[in-house]
Image 1 (cartoon, rainbow, N blue to C red):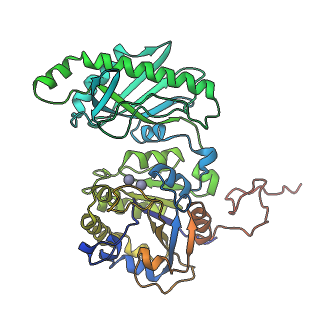
Image 2 (cartoon, rainbow, N blue to C red; image 1 turned 60 degrees about the vertical axis):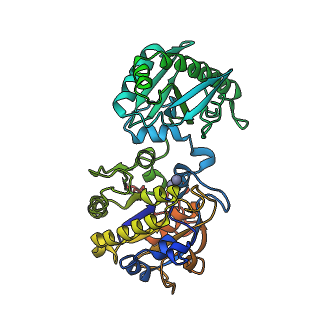
Image 3 (cartoon, rainbow, N blue to C red; image 1 turned 90 degrees about the horizontal axis):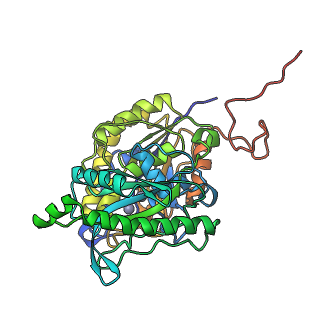
Length: 439
Ligand code: ZN
Ligand code: ZN
């Protein structure tokens, strides 16, 4: 069997609109494409709807979909995925939320959110408050709450106990000058009784932690110094730790992930990829992009599938900065040179997990451009890699759920539809076959 390794590069929030400050080009069109064009000349492009047309994906759902997971049956919420990426070990069945220390002001019986980051409280102070909460608000009705402090205002909240369901809503209103929300049961919850139990617990815990934080010495000091107190824990993204079938079990490919942002590291871990840590990879514009490409180059010799994630494109989109985004894509293009020698014998896909138009500053439901090259592929005649050229590329318009089928075909691992070399219904030739014993 011909061994063709696959490199999946995701530039987060890559898709965009055109802007006058970029001469009516999109950030991708305006970027340097010296090395991208070499890949383009070896392949074809098209548009991808990560989930479905018009559906703006979150990064975690888009990634899982692209990696071949079924969101309806295999997505278990953002909280545990992000926690895993932060190196927190969760046990199966434990519930986790992503959380932020924020600032509230009590007005009547409402807690109005003044700041969702408590004035960007430093990591060390967050740790002190976390310690206090883990002592003073550890148990509610016999259920255990454990808070883990992350960088700055960020934290993870873990809930342990029997008969709970994660199918609850956020208390974070995702906006300022709005009251903290009541945690409620999701309408589509499969186990409403267990979800109600968790929602009630979360509401009691929110009120209890507000009181504990209000009395914290550290907050007294912050107020005296004219800083915002961190007097609320805003949570979102409830999820339950669940073991997913591994990427190898699903696709028969030995896979590695390279990412800086916690969520993306978490995705790689959740699907059982080997996570390759790169020093200075931080999911920000100053990430160690060179180090990430060096790591990818090395990994391509040992793995069948390498997932490389870069976050800064999405960062600039949320900031509404198309020039910054375009410059980062140019920097990405420069660094592609590191894997130049791999271009011809590797299958490479460059795409985004969603469109984040700089003029909207939020994820949109528009498709993303996808470029794919492989040693054996029907090439197209598109001129540059871009949202507009992608719409006439020979790959057409695909969905996120098509990606892994295309990947397996490009690495020449597919078997013809209907072929049954193994009891499991799979679309690739398994590496372990059961041979007949002749006695
Ligand atoms: Zn994203
Ligand atoms: Zn985003």
